[in-house]
Image (cartoon, rainbow, N blue to C red; front, side, top):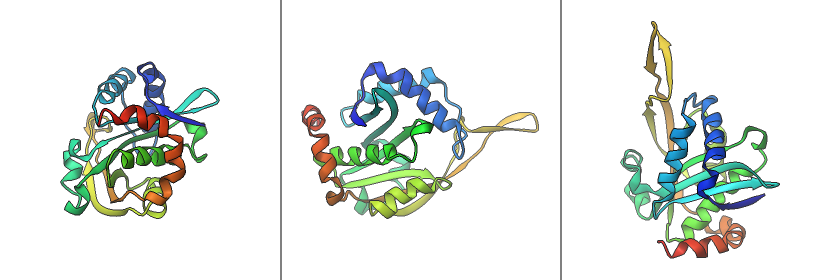
Length: 203
């Protein structure tokens, strides 16, 4: 498996993986692929964005996005002040269904953290559904983060029909925060070193 930087020509296949992923429980969100593809292009232009793609045997199987926590004001407001300083927000993680539980998601998480550490970030912040225990396990049990807050999130992408009308259905999210653990990142940092060198000049 290869972890590399996002390229604009990746947007369509990544948008399909993303929309398929978030259509499933516990998210149950309906996104348009064009909407998601446009969002990917926009986010990839931010100077603080880390946008990575996972490939297996030449096929794209997942993606992950991270950027400065300051861009996610609703989450930053719930995080202890000691963790907001030099904090990277682990924004999006999505993997094709046949490739889950095979280490793809973990590799994307670790690669983002490795690059964030190189770019001067000391802390990590992530948010996931309360019904997504595997992500909580990765951040808390494997990477040393702790749950610092819960947040009820409503989105027009997540709806159901009630009395013949479409209504938004809230989802309970966990917010996790902690230091980026250096000892976990050494091997991955070596793997992503060429990418780090290319992007370092933009920070």
